Image (cartoon, rainbow over all chains, first blue to last red; front, side, top):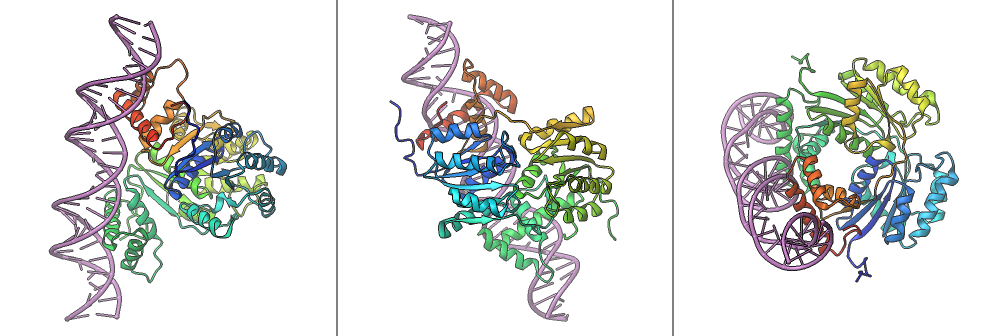
Length: 218
Length: 218
DNA sequence: AAAAATAGGGACAACCCTGTCCCTATTTTG
DNA sequence: CAAAATAGGGACAGGGTTGTCCCTATTTTT
């Protein structure tokens, strides 16, 4: 009485192949945020990945070719992983995520069937929605390594995520822009009232003041 | 009227230097979980890091030596980053987190003053508490790369974190162990009632059944 | 066959986060 | 000076998560 049609649901089935545990978890979270109705599987090594590929059918597979057991300096080894995975999931679309990206590797991966090539370096929270959309529109998406000018981050254990987020944006306020304008931008961005954004900022500020520590830019 | 004593609070001040955004975020979360009363700063590149090191005093600095602008194949470049950071924060303890660890690099880092050397490969969620304790007890902690036998992971967008967690543990149940025993272990581990753990598992199961998808091991 | 384990629920309080609205001083800007 | 912006709050509803307790069938074990 086994159910034959296991892929009847409307969910997107995703597989993440990545040996760094924290990165794999982060990618899983990113994927779930980008694809609200999704089921995401994680594989820490190629053995598990092959098992899952044989027993499930995926719509999207994300591969980090830098797996243990393969020589990280050997391009052939890296491509082997990608090629095997693609052969086992011919109907899925495939992304490669890597810490050491090169233009040549992307070109080679593209020939193997990869449509997304993303440097870990250039993969920010929330960026996957853009990547997915770009793939849908243009057929591929490439984000090579990029020395970013990200502002310093500040995390206080007493703040809620919203407060953290609002505070992060406020700390990037360019001179000449009033806070009020930021509140409006934030309200627009998060689809909340500007007054609410203001409230969050004030509460965050109050918390930091109480503990005697708020960053320079207020 | 500037406040001179900025480090009066009881909080632990942490700096994470890591160029991969998702990994940096993950490390920040891990640190906040491991050090409940902590203030964590993140730096995506060495420039920001140096700025922060000059303007703040840290208790713990976590460094990924594989920063852009440095030749990843050059050991000298990697050590340079570590050395400069240590010189600018002589009172802090220093961890190195890297995707490409070697025994020799650890030995060299140790001479520079590093007390924690962790392969990203071998850094699981929650592991930092153990690392911190080991450092406190033995003075150092090393976790070199390790081809782990992690079980496959399964994430469904409709499950709460607790349900996700309980389900993850339940899926690893060895044969011969009853679910009830797992409930008791979980209750012990999360400091909740075994009955609550059972409840979470059942609810998770119900949700998966409703969408027509539950992993093989029930 | 009796006992234990399991499936599949309902009800409920407590808590936190979110989001909205409203208020008054004080400071800065035009 | 007058107007706008900012600091620093209070109150409150709604929602989700957590955690506890309780219930009845069905299945498995002993």
